[in-house]
Image (cartoon, rainbow, N blue to C red):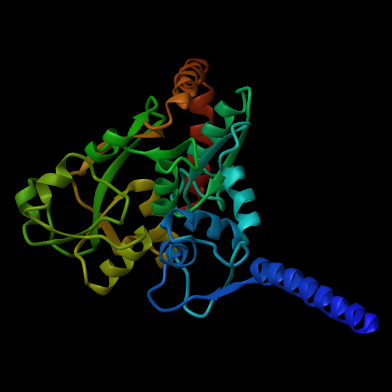
Length: 326
């Protein structure tokens, strides 16, 4: 009888151990196969009952996901356990570092494939290197980085122009750099731009997250505005004839026309630009504690302008950019 009890206890202990061990392993190693129509927000909602954990899923799967806005059906994502999720959340809420986010594919201003990660990134890095905290810069997709900044996962993002919608949500730094936004058309299109009425019923491509300034609202009732995800998509649509005009700053357009299509002579810019805009660092208004750093950022930026250091950084990047597009 005693032997049976001992055997029973051993079996129960073994089962309990297997349950606990295997259960934890399953949680730690659970996976999700991406389905058609999925996004990180949708997956987070299914698993965690809330869309706000999409950024933790992205951080946990960065070896697979290069752009948080682009996931493919069939990808197998690792799902963080509750403990792993807490560690990632703590990382985002760490007050010991300054957390910044920017995007890629915006030459010559920012991109982790550019020298010093781009002109604006180098300027921002230089300024924050003089602060009393360590600075961390992440390269995320523009939409996800912008949204994550609003959610408080980052202290600031850059470079952005002023729009009425953004001004409700963000504080702006002083201007870091000015850009000219032009309209680009296929050579021989016959399109001229002197007044907004010249663009009536024309298909104008402006990627998501981009703005052409005050004239954009005026053009909404005149031209048909198309908004794909990236500037490259706009030029692809222009080549195919699916749009007639692409709105882009000259820097980004020159790189795309040269690298993507081999010959920028296939395109011409309209005689009149859409706007002259300023690029800024922006911080969410719900992050009041970071406002003091914005004031300090402005002071250091003004000093860089007075000392000529800003001009030297800009000139170096423009020289590289000009060589790249010849």
